[in-house]
Amino acid sequence: MKQEMIFQPIFPSWVASGTRPFIISGPCSAETRDQVLATARQLAGTGVVDVLRAGIWKPRTRPGHFEGAGEEGLAWLMEAKTETGLPVATEVATSRHVELCLKAGVDVLWVGARTTVNPFSVQEIADALRGTDVPVLVKNPVNPDLELWIGALERLNKAGITRLAAIHRGFSAFEKGPFRNAPLWDLAIDLKTRLPELPLICDPSHICGARDLIPFIAQKALDLDMAGLMIESHIHPEAAWSDAKQQVTPLALRTLVNGLVKRQPEIKRAEGENILNQLREQIDRLDDEIMQRLADRMKISRRIGTFKKENNITILQVSRWEEILHTRLAVGLAMGLAEGFSRDLLKLIHQESIRVQEEVMNPAGPAGKTG
Image (cartoon, rainbow, N blue to C red; front, side):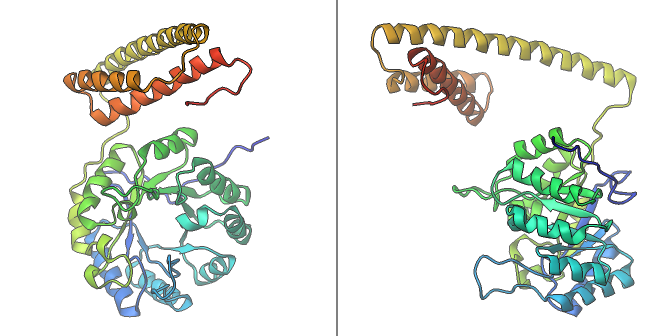
């Protein structure tokens, strides 16, 4: 039987009141003492940063690149905390990392995407944290696997860690798009739906891979009711020893954060709430109609399957599918629907139609194939 997870607030100010989100910021890597302290001073001076972050151990794809300052960097991070008063956070990937961070007094730990993907590594970290009350943030796994993400949170929670939050940092994709890591917002929304009490923050730096795109993704995250942002900042981003293209200066961070719009998840005015409820009721009615129409369509697909079976006709007919796709996409565009949305919707309907027909033609065989 699956145990329900218990969550406690990370900090009293985790969901920041006012007009700006909760912000975690700092360099991708702690490179030198001077670099860490100078960045920390400037970030503290912006007035928009709640937690100072820096990578102490850096998992790199290939050897030979800078892999972090190691234990020495923890001393720099703690010195920055003493000078600025900001809580500090860093990534851990092994029980040894956890031990050193707890000994140094690091305030917040996070589990990176490359670690989340490995249940053995997550369990090692969970075991090392057992009996502590340190806040832990869990980044999504590199690959788009919601169960792995939730599983990592469960392992930590079962070890007694209740001050948990998740970080949406995007997912690796075979086809490269405009972002370093595909946002796949649906997975983040699914996580919020499954674990509504869990704070979810966004890491636009790792999603974007380029500083110019960060404001767009940051605003998108806030519009999806995420609790905060983790944004990498460096005093000299172009000279950074790791991920130079996705870091911003502290001054640029302040401008970026002050330019974001923090919206409320619910409207408080009675008049506005009534209008919103009326619009939602219209959507509910339309959704019911859509589901009924889809059910009717599949009934016809079943009749088509019966006809094809009786007349020995193949289920998949490419020319017919191409005709449907061409005509329906044109209709969708004329109605103001995005082509990508219409194409994805038509593909899903087509796949289900084929499944229904196959179920009719091969009742004893496995269902769900799409030909």
